[in-house]
Amino acid sequence: MKFLKALFVLLLISATACTSVQVVTDYDARTNFKEYTTFAFYKTGIDKAAISDIDKRRIMRALEAEFLAKGMKKSANPDVLVSLFTQSKKKIVLNEHYHGRFYYPYQPVSVSKYIEGTLFIDVIDVAKKEVVWQGIGKGVLHAKTGERKDKRIREFVAKIIAKYPGNSSETE
Image 1 (cartoon, rainbow, N blue to C red):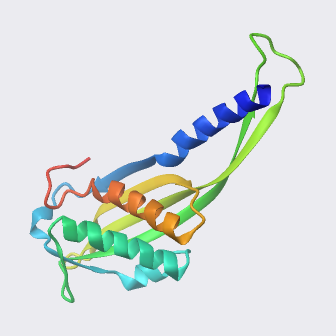
Image 2 (cartoon, rainbow, N blue to C red; image 1 turned 180 degrees about the vertical axis):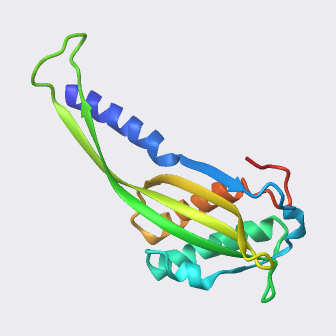
């Protein structure tokens, strides 16, 4: 019974931790993002990302869909270039399980291991040759199959690009 209770608590914590993507953004306040109507990918920057080519394509498809949904068009002569960078860290969480209100010296401890991923998306003004916006999303990478990876990547990208100020009034 104690095992089932501990398992339930661990699953509840894992479920809430795994679903959220934490997003922060930064941008050049002097930039009029509504002037940017076309985009392309910055291949040189994307090639440096330390992930598989398949995952790069997943991210780029998700980015393209989000920017198109914001009213931008993909172009060979773009206003902005979109680049990405990734990081990942192995995380270990130790959970002590208390029995009642008292501390016992030999508490059962459970160990959770997961990978936390960070996706950086940079928007570069082609004319100025400088980054004008950056979105960073951080969350747990738990998907192992291609279909689940697609879904998790789309979630990361959608939450980050939702903060992009172009063609919307939302900035951070």
